[in-house]
Amino acid sequence: MKIDTNKFEKKLKDELNLVETELKTVARKNPENKNDWQAIPDDTEKDSPDVNEAADVIEEFGNNAGIADQLEIRLNEIKDALARIKDGTYGMCGVCGEEIPENRLEANPAANTCIEHAK
Ligand SMILES: [Zn+2]
Image (tube, rainbow, N blue to C red; front, side, top):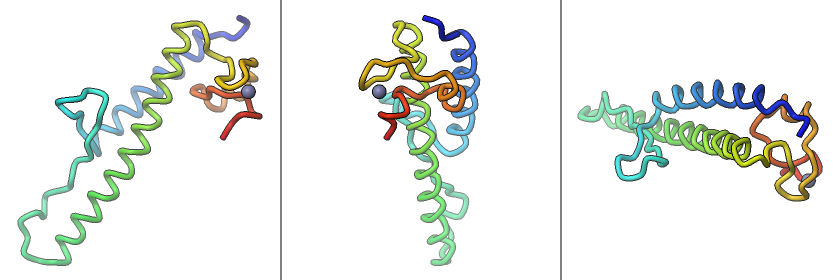
């Protein structure tokens, strides 16, 4: 394989650390399922009798959950890409098996399809 997987493995691991760090600010790992993250509600105002503030808490929880979902999806994409480096299928389209252009991998090291088969 002509793709320099070491270079992309490093990029992926850097991004993995970054995404995990961000994820920890909005979510915590589910103690029963280490691959699942649960959004942390911002509960500083939880006991407030003020309805508006309670609504803010709900909104904040919604935001955290939304951000956590996005980060979790990205985290899984990165983990999948790292797994493909290990099993030697990294850089190949998951649909047609063609090589993914290196400039596409530069833009998104977790890409697992060629441009034609990108969603
Ligand atoms: Zn393809």
